[in-house]
Length: 465
Ligand code: 9WN
Image (cartoon, rainbow, N blue to C red):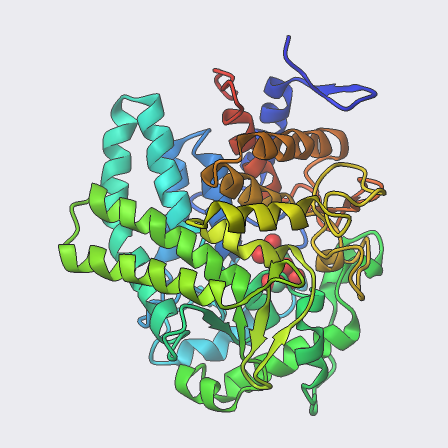
């Protein structure tokens, strides 16, 4: 029998792990959307939902489609997909800043009908990748679901196009091919050292006292951002709210305006998926040409951010006009964007394999820490400052396959499954000990495990119970 095993022990069969992952997703299922995690994150998060849809596709493609459509129903008139849709049933004092903190965003002329309230930030656009994945899984399964998945793509395509158009215009008025973010929360990698110098320059004004509900849901406060980080996060939110979430005023006055290479690379990959969706739904030729243009522009923009000395792509601070020289997994953006020359891919692989990432001697599993252990500011248990994150590993795995590196991809897949089978469905993991950190029963961790289990080199044909 095939098993997922570490060098020392047999951890689980793929069937057992898939059953456990399915249980996590079912437990967090709220009907037509999924909580990011049961206690720490009782709302719908944007990029979490996209990854969740990828996993759900292996349980039920129709339910997976609903996950995305539920999110798209809260799209802003600008095309923005909000980073959080607040759950009206969430227990009070469970998450801060919650719906009441963001309620004022609903007065923006661009906001969708409320309640439910949404935040006015956004997160990386994994959604088109997820939508296409749902269709591909349905096609693989054959039968009735393929027709339903086709109808889903027809329904989702206009929302996806508006979303990508928003990112390519409001968030890139320069036409650089790179997306500007207004807040570390938009990057999805909140307290990454990527943002340290930019945040250090933000002068925090008067803030009323606020609760840190997040700390009650983790074993140790060092796993979450510090109070100083939170002061800055809330100050930036205050400024965005003061600008009535108006993109043009934000762009003019905001102190945190950064070209985020990971966000931008995900957009390129998502545009490739969107182009395929456009073909499948028979979209107009002009729309397909526009998407092709976004892809090319994105790749050019990212190539300009490649730093050969560091061997990574670097974010760019629009305020100071300087690159942010920090070694994190975001630097592998060119790999995620795809379409690179063999030489460029080799240069990325050299960095990935170096002691700064997979070649570091203390790693429990051969998986990249979110921040390089050789980077100043690395912290092995603090959130995005060092721990490994399964969703990031999923993106790298998927990108390695697309880049024609199946052996590398398979190593990542095996190690990721071993990590999850051994430590559980954590939010993130200590890269040295493999200890599970942050939230437990994190939905997107279960989701990517399901996708990995369904996409081995020799696919294990099985029904997930
Ligand atoms: C703020 C839900 C989200 C993820 C982010 C992760 C974390 C929120 C928080 O949780 O961010 O958006 O409160 O820490 O950083 O990537 O989407 O899982």
